[in-house]
Every structure is written in structure tokens, then in C-alpha cells.
Image (cartoon, rainbow, N blue to C red; front, side, top):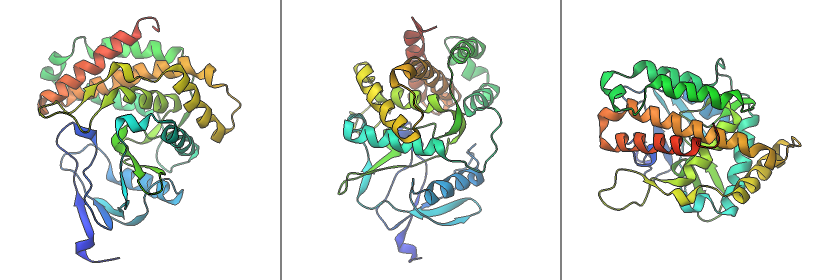
Length: 295
């Protein structure tokens, strides 16, 4: 197993930046519970084990009551926002995501994760958090009903948070690995893709000093050509016979759902600092802007 010196503990960042974990050099990566987290570590470990066994994530060395010891991805680093969109990486991400969507993970299914999470987020919003929102949570949920009413998507196991910080690239081989499935669960497949496309416009790393932990780049949303190419690679794994062009409107609708989801999520985190409030306003503003013509 190795010595204690080879095991490196990491903890979730208390800032918005990357919405992920810090990595430190070493042979193994140790994941432990975060005080007050709402994420179920038992579920998280089950998901991680399934990803590891499928060859879609780092190897799992051991689990314990509040965490696990996992393989450290040597010679690897998170993709940058710009790299994530490059064809050489986008194709790998699409295929990896399709393989994730084919997995059967032994966790409860029930209602799609999008709906479960939003109901929980809204139930936990106190008066101060509600006051931060431009509209009531119920207003946004009515919009979500419109999105889902005309957006056909299978329910599959999803990553649900596929942004730059959660995609590792081996800088020697050039292959990618998806990490951090804490938000993973059974959800709309097209939400996973729409959420990833929405993240094209949000950078979390290598930002100027004094930033709020993110940067919106409106000109970075995927073009139709980029979406078609990504969806083509995705479909090539599933061999579902679906034309990428036929999926675009549904994916766009779930991009809206992504903005709504992370906007309301940020409202619940608003007490932690102005970065979350700014992120909430940005995601909900993008939701309103992109809703025009779709809803």
C-alpha cells in the first residue's frame, strides 16, 4: 500500500474556484469527509468503485467510513477551459461520457437527480437566500417544467458536473480521465451533455487576481458544428442510430436547466461569500437570456 508519506490528503476548496478539489503530488490521493457536506460518502464510494472497475476513473485502493484512498493520476492535470473544447479532447470527453451513461451503478434511482437536487436546494433556502434571487424559486421551477415538457431524454447514470476541473489529462499520453463524481446519479442524459456545453462559457482556473472565482465568456459557448461533432462521437459509442442534429434542441433546453440548477444551488451557498452571489446572478441571467426563443 505504501507509506504514510505517499498518501496525500485533500479537502474540498472553500472557494468557488473549480468547484472541485486541490491535488497534491504523490502516489495516492486520499479523500475524506467534508464537515457539513450533504454528499453521501457511501454513495460516492460506490460510484467511484464502479468507475474504477470500468476503467473510467482512477483506481480504488481502499475505502473507510468517511472516505477512500484512490490512485493519484501521475503526470496529469485538469484541462483548461480552452483545452476542453479542442477536438482532440472533446472527442475523448464525448466517448467517455457515453461509456459512463452505459453503466449500471448500484445506487437508488427514483426521481431524476436534477429534480431531487432542486427540490432539496429550494427546501433548504432560508429567507436571506430567497431574498438574493431575482424571482421566486417557484418561478424557476415553472420554467423547468416547460423545459422538461418538450425535452425527451433517457434516464441514465450521469456525472452531472462535467467542467474543466473534473477532467484530467495525462500530459505525456494525451488521454483524459473523468474525476469527481460527487454529484453523480441517475439523471437525464441530455442534462449531462447540456451542462457540459454550458460549462464551455465558464472558466474557473488561471483567472486574474481579485476575481470572484469564475469568468463568463459568452463567446465560448459551443457552435452548432462543435455540438454536432461532440454528439456524433457520443452516438458512435452508444450506436443508437440517432442523428446529432436531431439532439441539438433538446441539448439546448438542458443547457437552460444547467443554468437554472447552478443558479439556485449558488443561492443556497450565498452566505459563503460574494463569489457565490455573483455566480448565482450570472447563471440565472444566462438562463433568462437563453430562454428567449426556446421557451
